[in-house]
Amino acid sequence: MNGPIGRVHAIYPGSFDPPTNGHLDVIARAATIFPLVTVAVVVNPQKRDPFFNLDEREEMLRRCTTEYGNVRVAHFRGLLAEFVKSADADVIVKGLRVVSDFESEMAFAHMNRALSNVDTMFLMSDSAYSFVSSSLIKEVYLQGGDVSKYVPPTVLEFMEAKRHVTGRK
Image (cartoon, rainbow, N blue to C red; front, side, top):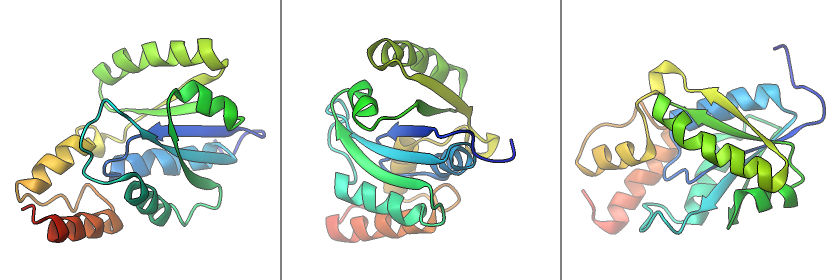
């Protein structure tokens, strides 16, 4: 594709705890397809004890996406379908790393379509990031491993500041 299509607003939801290079790859590609992309940080009550609070996750994403004039960052609580409707969005974008991601995301895509009449578009992860997840990044980092190839420098700075403040490894 040579550029954005139509007047379409895409929502890219996630917990982004922390944002990874895989997330940024999906954002960059979505930004070339859609005139407006909202990166929507979800407050997920099922994910207890996040490493970064909501404000930190939003700030990291803002800093990591400044080069894209058509990307904004927001957050929401509750149903994605309700946020999509309130944002007047046209499509949901989800990144897929492995086949099991599709299996779980397919049910969400069908439910979101039923609740909001908005389709979900799946973007395959770049193979360099197909094994990278926020959970894995946190685990490796907290055990003293080097995650600098898998997160943007801004995110690494936030991680190091968090380690310094909390006294975690």
